[in-house]
Amino acid sequence: MRRFPVDWLISTGLLQARLCFFLISDMASAPAQQPTLTVEQTRVVLSEVIQAFSVPENAARMEEARESSCNDMGKMLQLVLPVATQIQQEVIKAYGFNNEGEGVLKFARLVKMYETQDPEIAAMSVKLKSLLLPPLSTPPIGGAIPAS
Image (cartoon, rainbow, N blue to C red):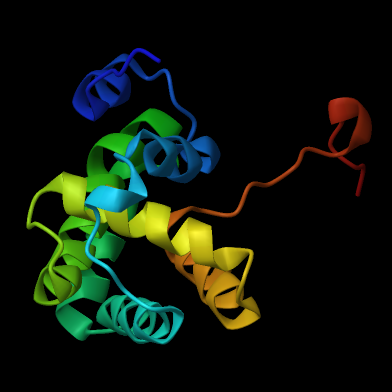
């Protein structure tokens, strides 16, 4: 499988925000190269990552990035994803993941692996994704605006 640098994918606008989390986690290297965390440890780290997004400074950074993106998916990837990555890096580096984007990718892969085994991790993963990605609004059937 050919690997493309994440920066290139983002700058070319080839990714949609909803697919980004899954694509990036699949691009991470093999699980054998990751720090070894048990299911329980992964729950703790994932909980700390989610809590990190609630810290006022981080919440303000995320809000500023979202506002700057103006709901444009390409801009979301360029502005919001790097801030979210930095917030996650600050937490996971204490658990042996490197302080580069690769550490976040490896952590995402670990979470994805445990999602199928542990309902609590699966629920926390959904919560984390909701913090990172905006809800998609679906247009009305037929694309028409209802009359008032």
